[in-house]
Amino acid sequence: MTVTAIIAAAGSGERFGAGFPKALIQLGGSTLLEHAVAALAPIADQIIISAPIGFEAQISKIVGDGVIVVSGGATRSISVRNALAVATGEYVLVHDAARALASTELAKTVIATLKSGENAVIPGIAVVDTIKIMGADGYVASTPDRASLISIQTPQGFKTSVLRAAHASVQEASDDAVLVEANGEKVKVIEGEERAIKITTQADLNKALAFLGFDSTYRTGIGVDAHAFAVGRPLWLAGLFWPDQDGVEGHSDGDVAAHALCDALFAATQQGDLGSNFGTDRPQYAGASGVALLQETLAIISKAGYAIANVTVQVIGNRPKIGQRRAEAISVLSQALGGAHVSLSATTSDGMGMTGEGKGIGAIASALVFKQ
Image (cartoon, rainbow, N blue to C red):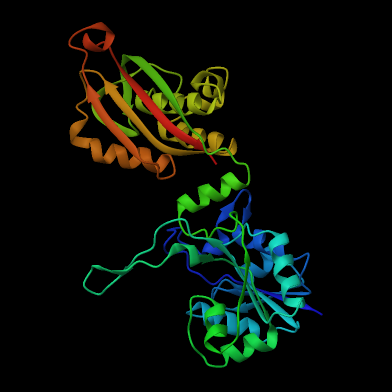
């Protein structure tokens, strides 16, 4: 009794905001699609993927030989029908790539239940929230008893002939069980699993990472930098060149805002500090721009498995006046950090100390990061 596994992977990922198909989103070093294929491969004689149009070759390269890739459609039902047309198994599992962490054991249980005599089997978990049915007027119309409600997951299993008959109606539905029910078949519900969540948003992805044992705890760091003014040196500050201003002393370009941000990120991620990464013992960083150091810092913390949630930096000094170029500076700093959210402010020290006396300029920064 052979089994075909169909993986619906043609979703655009628009709600996730990734800018590319959701099936290609990375989860712990592998794409969602690769996770789904790995879970079904031990129990499937044939695997068929319905891919987004234009991504067929890329997905074929990712999953390798032995997996059939067909073009998906504008709806989930069309994508499944396209795959079903080349299915050869007596039984068929229909799975969503977005439920990447559904286990092999769950798929085995679905198949075992089919082989016991059922024509359609779906996994589900109990609904814990109270569900309301809302009328067109915006008011609650009714409240169903949640004891009889379940949240449905995939993979869903069917006798292939039964699923083909249901799809022959050329209807559209949110899952295949709906079509099978509409065609008069009984659908057996088995217990699903918490890890088979549908990954639709970044929050879902973080939850999936937790199931894989990844630490998503947030961490913070603080960085401080200061340099004395040096006549004749160009002034680079917050990633910008400031004409008609004296620059500062330093091994690199002396951009105290960028340097403080680097130190804050290194502190948050325990990757050393500015000196250990870009110090005077490393001649390749002589004269390096603050933007270049930020880009290098991003690469270092990313390699260590961290992502930036937010950074802030406050420039301390009598000059230059930051306000008129604040938006420009934020844009440059954010781009250097891969699009991270950046806050930039400025203050003086009321005539006190090196900055207050006009002898130099300083900055203090904070960073909030999380382990991916």
